[in-house]
Structures are given as structure tokens and as C-alpha cells.
Length: 182
Image (cartoon, rainbow, N blue to C red):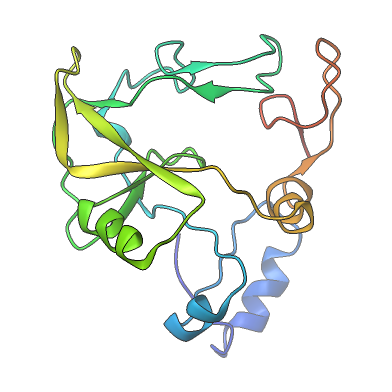
């Protein structure tokens, strides 16, 4: 993995060589561009998957339930995540398990969001240890209830990497666990 700017002289040749191969290309926006955007997708760049309990099953029934056992459509998080230790984030304010949907942030971020009166999300505690008797002090989970319009979300999440699929079990369309890779 490496970073290269589109105005770098090597970019046109690199883009030609990448072609249509499965490659992640991201865009870095300025603070001004982010503040003026109608929608902003936040992803945690820092992965804390090594702190997670359990580390092997991403869809553990301890944390999730779904309405369809075959494709996972309708899944819902039912319990706070547990970590084996307080994660070290360095200068990062956001992090995730690298799975794409979970987002965590340091407590001052939640405090600032509250001060600004931001809506459409809730913050949840993250628990410590297998028994989960205490909370991780430096981290909260951000759970977003409001979603971008389908034209934005589908283009990014489905059309770029997946095709629409109808689950033969529940007849619902989509759901990243039953989508076919292009």
C-alpha cells in the first residue's frame, strides 16, 4: 500500500498499469472540502482488531442478530463490543476493526459532536475484558442511525465492488454478506 497524489507526474502511468484490477483508490480531501460537503463518510484508518474479543468471528452471535440466517440481511448489533485492553491510538481520533461498518472515536470527539448539536448518531460504551464489567475509558462507539441517500450509498458501497443480489432465503435485495463479488 502506498499513497500518491493525482498531480504526481507518475500518476498517469500508475493508473494505466492498475487498469481495472481490484485496487482501492481513495481520495484525500482538504479540511475546507470536508466541512463544505453535503455528506461525509467517516472510516477509521487505525485498526484495533488485535484488541477485539473474540478475534476470530466477525459476526459473533454475542454481538449481532439478523433476520435472515442465510444472507445476514437485517443484522443488528445487540451488545457493546468488548476489547481485551485499552487500545493505543496515538494521534488518531477514529478507529475501527477494519470491517467497514464499526466506528470508534475518542471521548473528546463525542463531546465536541454534542457541543455542536450534531444529530443522527448515538455513542455507545466499549467494554473491557471478556466479562465486560468496566468500560474502556478512552473510546466510544459511534452508531449512525441516519444514512446517505441511496444514490450516494449504493454507488460507493454496492456498485463499485458488488452487484445487487436477491437472497433466495428471505427475498431481500443486497446485504453485503450475500452480495456477489464482481
